[in-house]
Length: 140
Image (cartoon, rainbow, N blue to C red; front, side):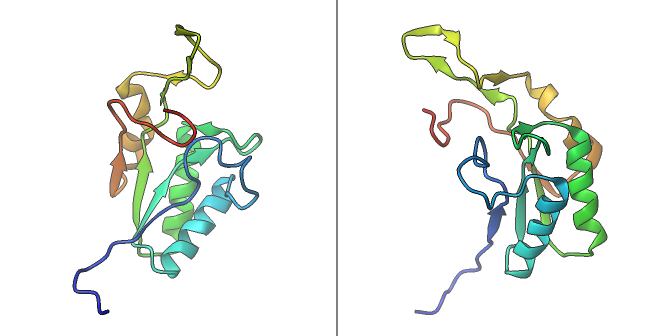
């Protein structure tokens, strides 16, 4: 059946949360993330959605220097792809099911403005800022 609508493919390069321990194929370093972005664009992705990781641990990070390195590496290849930086980090609340007032390890809560320095610095084509009550991955 022929497609009658245009399609935009977005590739979320690292996924969110603890994906590194779930698959050895998740890119971790800025070099790996940028390389995967270029490969995704070559395979047909119009948009790459980017989270960065601590290169030593693989844990999610908000480090603006890591975002800068990823974006610069993608741009220096001349790849035609829309760069979508996440601003979702800092909105994770893990609640103890037996004591809802206790926040468990994995909680990472900061204000909205604290989630934007890399966006203000790099001015990506688009960015995402998760807000409100959302369920992701293993959480609810």
